[in-house]
Length: 95
Image (cartoon, rainbow, N blue to C red; front, side, top):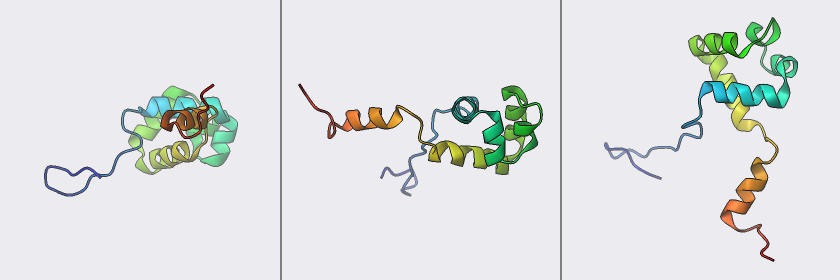
């Protein structure tokens, strides 16, 4: 684990470089607004939902943003696992 300038260990941020808009867009593409609203019960997902209005709310409301970020990290998106397996070489088969 890397250390900060103060000598304390730093944890790698899994969301580093991923914007809130990217997270929300990916979740909406994967689940759709209706299912997303059922998973995280906030009005911006259930009443006339849009990326713009949801981003405005999520940027102002930390608890809701944390729920969205947690769902994003726990979601298994198609194609991601296959890429991860191929990167480390353990599951690759050379022909």
